[in-house]
Image 1 (tube, rainbow, N blue to C red):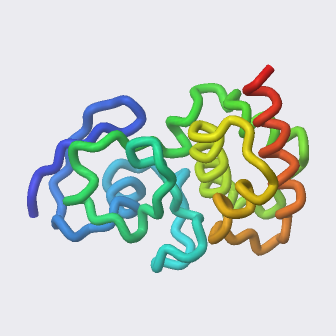
Image 2 (cartoon, one colour):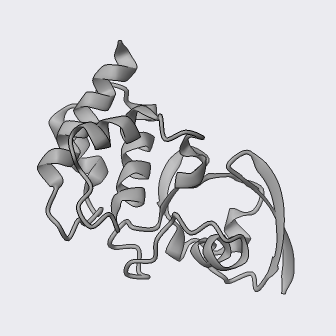
Length: 154
């Protein structure tokens, strides 16, 4: 066990865990931030996506020892009131079905738009590749990202 100081959603937190513990389990089990979901455990589905220094990463494969000292944002920290442009566009386009993948999808989409406020269809597809939606809402996801992109530009 070791103590790690973290900056999550703008707050300084510390945890005492095994250095190999994935960030996902620190978030869910130790810090009770359950918005980030466990999907596959091998960084292939995207359900566990968080922002790590502004980039979308899979938290199920990121050891806490590598996360300490970096800026981490979870779905809980994306916006206080659910009013981030991506979250609003998600609702406008009725993206959620079962909802399980949505936190990861939203985190990937918001990281894309932060780096590229006006992505092409191909850039959206590349950025969202690897975020699996079992309900198949990919067309609505892309439309929501376009809407969020337009609202950020306006």
